[in-house]
Length: 141
Image (tube, rainbow, N blue to C red; front, side):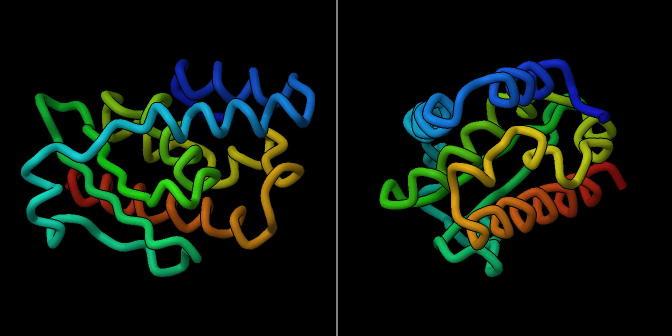
C-alpha cells in the first residue's frame, strides 16, 4: 500500500479499532474539517462538484510551493462524508502531488469503513478520491 505517513497512521488507527470507534473517529474528522477560505466560499464556481456523491460535495485543489492544498465542502447533515473529507484533509493536505497520485484507490476499504457507512457512501468516497486525484494530476502537469 502506498500512503503518505500521516494518512497511513490514520488508516492503521481505524483498521485496528473496534467498529464503534471507527464511527466516532469519522465523526470527529467531520467536526475538524477546515472551513473554506473566504475566496472559495464567496466564489463557489472554483469548486468542483462530485456528482457521484449522494451528498452535495465539492472540492478544490491548489498548488502552493510544490505542495497540494485541499479544500472540501460538505454539509453538516452528512457527517460521514464530511468525515471522509476531514480524513483526507488531515492525511493528504500539504503533500506533494506525486504522493497523492500514488495513494491506493481503495485505501479506505482497509480502514473498515464499509462496516460503519452504507455501500452508497463507500462508493461516494471512491468518487471523491478519484476527483481529487484527477485535480491533482492537472496540477502536476
